[in-house]
Image 1 (tube, one colour):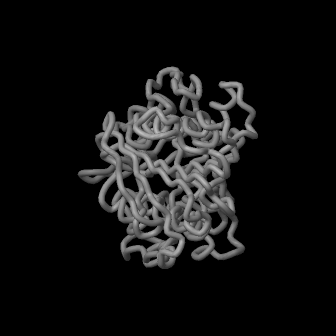
Image 2 (cartoon, helix red, strand yellow):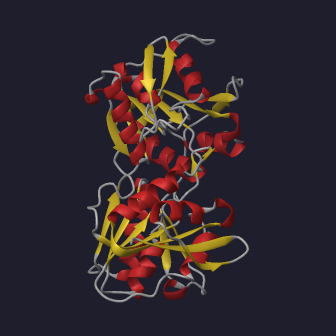
Image 3 (cartoon, one colour):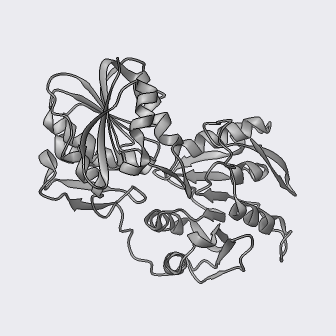
Length: 385
């Protein structure tokens, strides 16, 4: 745990779930730059934070916690961000009601007086959120974005210009930058292009040619990624009534393929992204039918799934947490899968060869079998003994 010091106070902050081995902070220079600007400790006066303050894309709740005195609304696509925010409020003795938590799938406040945007990694998610927020802002709304210099591109600024109004940037400080936007409520911004759908290629088994739906921000929303494509060609062939989990489901194409191949199975789609789970449900319903058996869960991996209740887990784990490369997420996914599986249950994983998932699986399961490989990817199988 680290301490963020601001003119508003000092705050003990941690990521979620808190891991004593994790030295990554729950904030960065972009968050600090935005807070200094709002406090008036930068080049200008303090920002009036009266009215409705909305914080979009706050990664671990640092901004919402520091600004809790203004009772902000936090909008995020991340379940883990919501949990981190709640935990950070509690550890700083702040009542949970001080911050209203909304997902990106929920309706924003009717009127927004201060809009603070942490620029996301996904330009599509930014586009979608700006379209959703634009009708709620007015000519006097204060709009400030923040991000590291490497996260803010010309395309980022063009989105603010096209959807909200005239936009400029600050000088860089500690490799961070601010975005200032003057809202133009009369701007003809056009319609929101999200969600986006595409047809799968013809060489991916039972889902060949099927249509998948992708809400903004979902991994590879424009086309099927090559890792998933390889995985779809090597999924297990199973029959009978069993419980299957698409863990880190994204747009749900892997779980949908498993369900189509085994109509007797019940499929659980799990992701920490609200956008992903909405995509998975749309993809599944369009291809498997309204009566097919499935559940859709936004959560922290398989932590909410009863132990020993699952027969098969399919997983294409991420190896990035925002800008950081880490194996923490995959390790937690594998550990959660082992707990959720029944004896004899199987975890099937696809990943880049260089990530060494076989070593981690042997440590957690005591075994790991290579199912398929090509020069870039491997599909691995681990069995709960």
